[in-house]
Amino acid sequence: MSESQQAWIAIAKAPSELSYGVHDGYDDEPGSHYEYDSLVGNHKNIKAGDLLFVRGSRHLLGFGQVETITTTHGAKELRKCPTCGGRPESRKTKMPEWRCMKCASEFETDELDSVSKEITVYRASYANTWQDANQPLDIDELLSFQANNDTQSAIRRLDFSKVPALITRALGLLLPNNGVFAGGLVKIEGGHTITVSRRRRGQQEFRLALLAANGPSCFVSGLNPEFVLEAAHIRPFAKFESHFLSGGLLLRRDLHALFDRSMLRIDPVKWQVEVSPAIKAFPYYQSFHQQKVVPPASNPPNTELLAEHYSASASNF
Image (cartoon, rainbow, N blue to C red; front, side, top):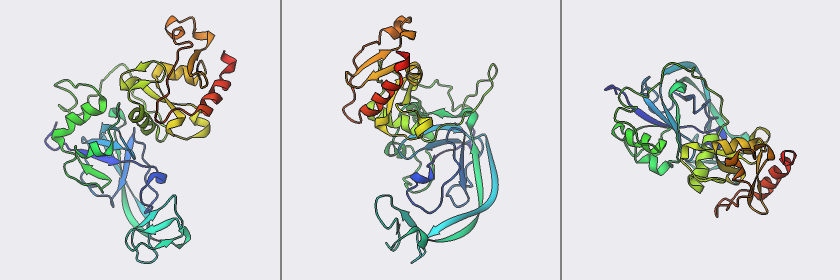
């Protein structure tokens, strides 16, 4: 660790998840880069070489070491209360849709005022060193790793002395004495080319929410290390693009692949596993056939969606 190296935690949200409707959000891709602008506190303080932890609306998503920071210039439309010029709050369950945080006025979208601000946009990239969080850390726990009690800023300074414990907690592993802090995150050279794949928005948050709700347990094979568990969508995400707890299963990576290929299915009436004849030649997977499963008491998988997957898999059985 260099004397000037620092660590930060930043929030990445889709526009639909923003608590306040002041603007339309940023072009974040949490596993690759984080975007912010000159209106955000601490925007001048993040440097290449710093550690950047990124959280979603509920959990820490992961972290990486900032490799480059690029800048562009532009303008940003900021929404304002038409009565007092204060900060408007977007409401999803009440009408009118907007309410002013300052004067409590309520108004419709077409009544909003706005002002254009010249800004510098920063993009911190860390794709080559990004590590997914293997287990869920919620917002309250993350606050204990901060350098102060800031609960408002989008980018907050972390107490660097607590970063080893934070990484250990996030990865669910014990780090070697000469781990990631001796000279930044370790990058293994040679043998493979590093590539970055585009992720589904919210996929990591979806996985962590399932872990938080159900613990590190594969729906089929039981207790497993967090880092081998994945969030499986019962209904194909590519078609329906939605994340909700009852629409997902925590499955070990290999079982997730079989489930997605309709070679493993769950009977939602008998609550038992069925494996396709095509993989019964493999004794380990054959052992799961007709195994009983117990849905969790809270947020059990949606039986209608499981029935839909069960029927769609019929040609493989």
